Image (tube, rainbow, N blue to C red):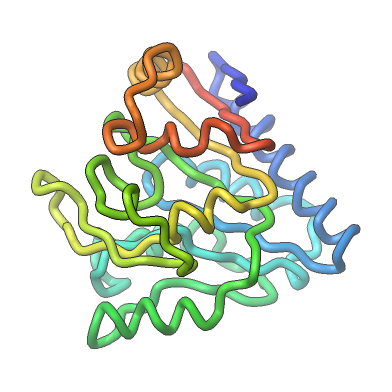
Length: 222
């Protein structure tokens, strides 16, 4: 795991954006197309906004949502609402997201049918509890590997919206490249502690990704 730390937000944004843009450019050069899977949360939005200003052929890039709360997109709890605002005006080739349908299973089935065989670049955040996407400590999916590309999950009881949808651990792990964006001394300290004291993915989900061959952490120590 390659970890880079920054004490200035502007440097963190610039380095992260350049890494993402370079990956997308290389995907397009190699395959004629690219895909970018993005997480919600508050951390990545400034980077998405900067990425939207880059000189890239967005018409050859698919934007894929990593996870969502099962709420209408107009809800303040919606991940998509903020992702959409960050990329407003960008003309992606296609957008693949969790749309709020009448049943959560219908939302899942619709997304499953649209996802590509493999993810190119996946952007993740990290919770203080080690969760990424909507994959939490104690989830049954850690004991039962799932060949599906996306799954229905539940957040712990202390989260306002428990019903979630997420790309599966296996599908995320098979991404060609993974970038984890971290903001805050507390999260960085927690990550460092967990790297030195492995406790298993059921206790610290991010551990699932540690052995990925192409994973980087960009941490802003605000």
